[in-house]
Image (cartoon, rainbow, N blue to C red; front, side):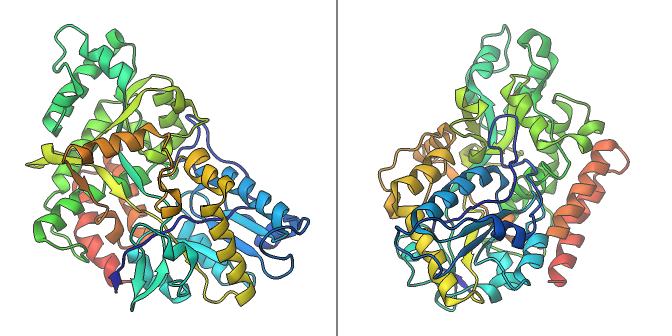
Length: 459
């Protein structure tokens, strides 16, 4: 298998899954609703008057959506397309953390998704058999980032480039800099873990003086939030190890940088808005609300946490990289890449395949589609059809500023070689045990070494 050059933005939505999110608006860590019955969803999709590029009755679209934070926007977009063309478009949104489980169930149905997602190349082993060759499609031809290719054929295309790191409240941090005896006086001085820890420790000690409840928001370890640490933060120790070894994937790890993973997690647990023993019950909504309400200065999340109509839209926010205490980390930027790919179900009917590709072409070329993706969803969309489209999201600007300054962008190679969803679940359980003091750090170390290799062996 090799990776080629191109991407996509796609999608579909329709009339089905209920809404999700709270706190700051569209946060990627909210649970969402469990996927509802597919046939019920399709029954509620009304065909409208003819009038588009496709005629009613010549095919339909069923998209199984990975991202609950943008469910409402896809529902609106799909309903509009149906109204304009008469082509039924249905979206079912899986609950956060349950996508593969939902896909396993849905893909086996007679009316299976025509469009589904893979999180990374590591999913090809399980799901590549369902991916159609879309090399000649409009979306693949106009993609401007890497697709996934197998035997020279494009089988998956991402539709959004994203970044994640430590989001900070610029105004609150500036208030801290103005305090007497602040350990630093500018954000430029926070360029490694030691400086970050010194600042966080000082904010925590002077939280009443600053008017906050903690340096960091609660590091929620329940299902709506733990992916921030079992996938995104877990990228860091694997990224550094693979970088040392000069490889881009691995099925076994030495765990060299797992102590660095512990460095930042310990800071999240101790310099925060709540006692570490409470983290198992803390949600993604909790963390978002704490940040948006000014209860904390720092919050680990990504570009998707900012939306034009969310509470964070009125805030002055930017990124810090995920510093963990690795030598030379002063030269890194934030983590950026593609974390989701869209795939056309090869087992769908030819009519449904065409309807799905027609819909996606409309999404990335029409004013309505582009405004939804780049505007309402605040995505950095990697298609040449979006060239010149001005991004509203300040977190994208912050991520790009590190790159412009010559900092090394941290790739997602670590998170993209995580073996299974079961591995992530086990890591989440280990983190809960560690945070509650019912187990020592060795249970977490084991996840990255012995368990990592075992999970890969079972694939």
